[in-house]
Length: 479
Image (cartoon, rainbow, N blue to C red):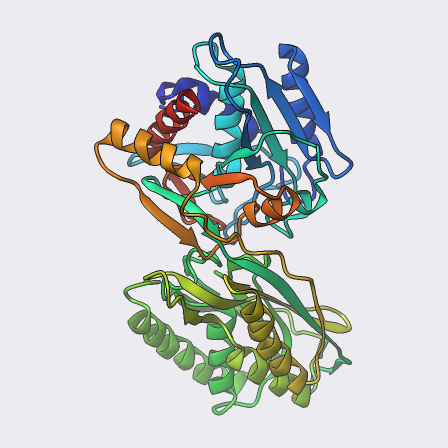
């Protein structure tokens, strides 16, 4: 079924890059692939010190006087997998399959974000029957963990002043603005004590959908860390247990889907624990039946642990995570349905001597990024945690008078007999940074339907990928 997908040229390149490991900050193999691609076709290319690559293609016949158009996509992907899935993102190719009109990956993220944008750019570079002016395809690195590639861009690396960002995930929508944001991390030194309990077990919370912390933050989905902390907070009222481990989440821009805690207790209290697990599984499934109906708690016996947190550290951590700010903080007063400001409690890990907590904040208003980060910092410092906070990346301010936007709207109406929706998004795009580095550049963003990004539920609608490709080709012809 994979071999029969249309458009053939786009899927060909998506399958090729899906076999190449491209985790954020480990893009060496995909960079080599891009350079080899350019060299084999005699296309000019450049690579900057950060690893960003630009590949240029001359205009097709009759379009030599058209303006240069930049196709921009990022080559890294969020690497998430389900518990129990055996996959090494540093070595293994993604295992793709088709299901009910969607393409997916077995047990892992699909990398359609932004692999489909990369594949579309490669298809344009390799296409023999396309009509377009001069093309520059900009492939940036490390978008997902800090927009590193975009931040490293220098003036003159590309020349075009019309840019099509191919990193959106909703067919029929054209984006002209996005949120800015930052990450805020917390840590605290700890000293563990000897475990004096006779029984140890792992409590596992799973079954949540997770997703992109910008796109899915307003969907009402559960946060595995907060739900697990809530369970432990209430369990502490029932039995006397100690805590050895608490771990969940990984990426700052993904809603945590799974989390586990390792607790120690006496054998006579096991029946109470089992009862509470059943009770809170029922609670969570009732509360999240419309958003995260698969949520569950389970327990598994472990070898008795040697050490545990002190009672004070246990209570502080559970209280902190249970009450941590998370979710939508405010909605835009100007754009209906758009989240203006939010924060994501992304991950918690307990090491040998330190507890680490990772969060991220977003807003379309720069001052509100600092405000919500300040609230998060105030919360963490009350619990005695130290923090580090990165400088924010800028928002992309909408330009409703964009010439590119007007062209795209006309093309969309001609192709699909309807106007596209013109939107801003709460997720971050590299356009905000690029706009600051290249003042006056005209930009829009669009893409096919991709659902469940940043989670193993990620899937791309095959039909919409075809529509995306036709839309892109016709825009290039019109410019």
